[in-house]
Image (cartoon, rainbow, N blue to C red; front, side, top):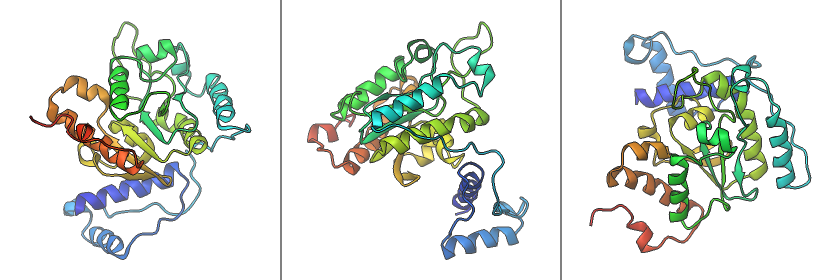
Length: 276
């Protein structure tokens, strides 16, 4: 109970700081629970009284982007052109090869959202083209779709910089995500998908704030600005944990997405990664 209330507190704070929401209507049960926590001096009796954000303008939230164009494809093209010349994160601009905006069908019913481009994505200018991206493509095909039928994008459009000589990728910072996420919000506003999949904890954090671990959030639909959002493990997690048990968890999440989209699901698909 206390963990759920703590997550609620964090989510309300995120809405205030990053979405410009002034007031959040809570159920009576939630209000009573938060009041009890405040009276006890915090969760567990050791934290300071719970302080929900007060109404007022946010000083850090990036304003929404203006969307122009007569078709979805044209609107996305204009947004991509704007992103291509963005210099709001000078440290990323100095190292990037390309701005990795997004790829797929402007009319897509399903969006996949990751955290940021890696090395291969930065070089090719397309999201999810490395090893994790190849696995994502297999996941999409297993659903009965193609990359061309869905839309794929990231919270951050530039590869997070690494120290000279260092290999690998790093998680984008909160500031980098807050600065860049208006582009993703605009993409979502243009495409208007029926459902979205957040790939990994960082993608969830970029959209909804630090509301929990991916292990506790996956498998249950959340909501992002009115659109159903399914959190699941990032494909890179499956590259590190290749047991059928972990693959099945992700597949069950995708089965729920298919059902939400009213896609046909065969018995063969329902049986993927189950023990024989």
